[in-house]
Image (tube, rainbow, N blue to C red; front, side, top):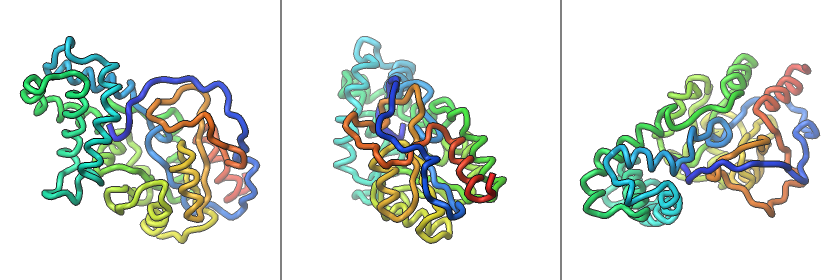
Length: 284
């Protein structure tokens, strides 16, 4: 619910990449920062399908909206609401809560998808909370197979861990439901809280500050977006690993067929991060 609509796609090749193992960094790792969506977890179903399911369950007519119409409607609705109420409406007059902000996203999406105002006005009070509840839980998202094992191993190795996300505090409920939050050793850094967003170097600097670490080598950011996660982190002076799993990804993930991955440290699994930490910190 925190990002754009999803659809399964297939990745066959990843050209022009440098494997993580070729990294020349040798200082011990002190802190590993993670992106959340498409790095630690991913939607159980494409998000537009989940929107459609809850809308129909909430009483909207299947004749008025379809999964595809919802998918087509989300981005325009998101852009409209985000332009009117930046930073989740935190500084709007009057301020919006994240729940109020997302209710507007849901409402505008379903209206754009084909629901009539009359029909939706009588149903949004049920549909909005149902959708938000779904995406705050493991009903909406699932972990990647190696996520929990990675976080547990890093904790055993006494490596600090946290997340950096362009999100509001509702994401904490999702992370808790997925059993990720209890395994993080440092407080999450959210764009809502620090009022800076990836790819700005500021959010990474804040993440280091919150984790009581100085920016520099030995701090690694792991994420799936080249600009927001990899280049954003390196612009702040910390290391970065671009995770690109073979197989499927959500189309909410930012991918560009023209993106240049030459010289980019790429990993195919979170297990690669654990291996690197062990190699650099304990020599094994």
